[in-house]
Picture 1: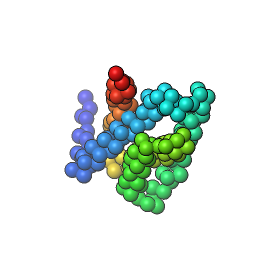
Picture 2: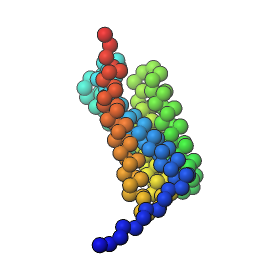
Picture 3: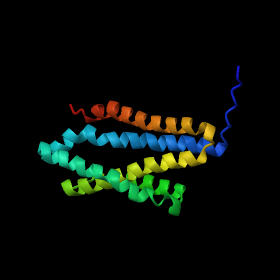
Length: 166
């Protein structure tokens, strides 16, 4: 029988980082799914035809591509700063979406929120890959990604209850 090597213990910093990245990525998963959950209400509120709603979502999803314009600055700005900027960005533009006054403001705020959201996810994955020991890296990245999935699951479960109006 072969002996199993002991895993490298995580430092207190790594434990805090692990928790922080997991929580940040939970909200990335939640926010990413939220648009599709509330699209029928948005379509009604903005009087959009089916094709217009599809075009709206398509344009917003181009923010996913634009996110890589931000991520490319990770080496120049630093991972921590980029992560802070992306979390602040998606928080600000998600809140701004709630006060959209027309379809154009909604479109711009959601595009920017999506851009910062995906950049946050990418920055979190890179940060995790660099900050954790090789023998823990796969588990850490897997759990962080699982928190993103959990955020989507919670969104799918909570939003229908939030949308009920009696």
